[in-house]
Length: 83
Image (cartoon, rainbow, N blue to C red; front, side, top):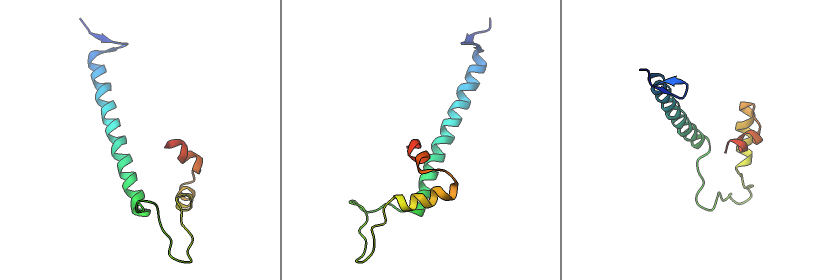
């Protein structure tokens, strides 16, 4: 007798679960790699944020974010929604 799980056979169910796990793993690896690439562009600041040299303006996170966002043709709002 064919065992059904929901509307699919047990064999198909196991295939779906295996593929889902592969996709989650891919997404996780992609997020970590994107983070590593972002840190290469803009390394983390010391605790308390960056401290500009005398006569220089504080370069906050929005300025470099705008540059990266513009180069990818997405909006800052898109990025904020993804966080």
